[in-house]
Image (cartoon, rainbow, N blue to C red; front, top):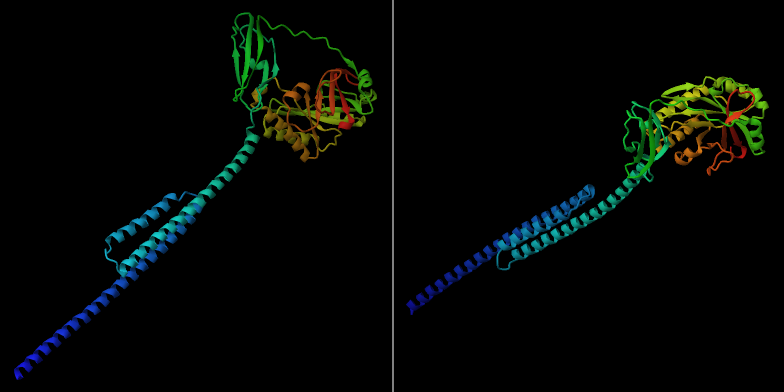
Length: 461
């Protein structure tokens, strides 16, 4: 029995040892598992932290991109797509390299991947929205900008380059000019022309002239502007051995007494306009003849030179002394705004504050070679308007003197009162005017030669 008992104790001891070993192994396994689980959790936390940082970076990037989009006004479609693709690729790579078995770490990783993907999608949506908003804002700004620029350009174009709506026009034309055999034919000596917009109208002469051979040469003169408008007239040039002397035409003069009887009413006054061509004038006799006013040339611009009419001072002094109402007119040939300002400064200096009863007239008559001035019709209208505005600064009013033809074909935008020249018994001019120059062959006591006769409409002044 004692042997058996010893054997049982040995077996018992062996069993205890096994149990201890197994228990120790289990404890070690539990500890090991706990350690790995702790490491896995830390790894998950680290991953989560990385994901959170990346998400924050994406959100910041999206906000910066959105801000940049608004600032730069560019499309952010590509940055949005790139961000989404980059995030998806990173999540796909991490999933593929992870464990195939589910574990808390896997769950954390998948959750982190979904978070990254969501963040990426949200970032993409934010960027895309910002891009779309930026594009809409850019489109609106672009439309507004175009509209504003269009309005500004339209205004500029209206002021500097108005729409060309009309063909050029002939302002002066000699139907049958005569040149001496051997002389060079210069078309600009026999015509004048202009366009509403173009300052350099193209002229074409269809036909040929042999100026060395006496004869008649038919020509067609064609004017063209940049807009494609054309106008033409026929001319017959006579090449002669000698230029024949001009034959004075018989002119019919008009006695001032007849003029007075025909046109003086309660609503009108009759008068004259004078310059050095009338030379010395006895204004006392002029007044006694029934004249109520006198327009007097003060001077002008001639071939680039400013001048004072040599009879101006005597004329205005004596006309006032005789009790006539007075006005002055300016012989105009200005080709630019600078020349207009120089002319008005000169005029005002000569005028020296003289009181006037009638507006100062702007008298442009150099239309025979108008194309040589390099102006269009808008330019000459602008010059007349500038003349008036410069005088207004000094307290004087202005008017425009011109003939019926030029008032209808040249002066389209001048707003000053009009002094109409139309030599006829009853004018057919449809526009408004306050003085009508009726004749240039009047006869009145106090003036030796011919004088212009004018009707002033008192209620239109």
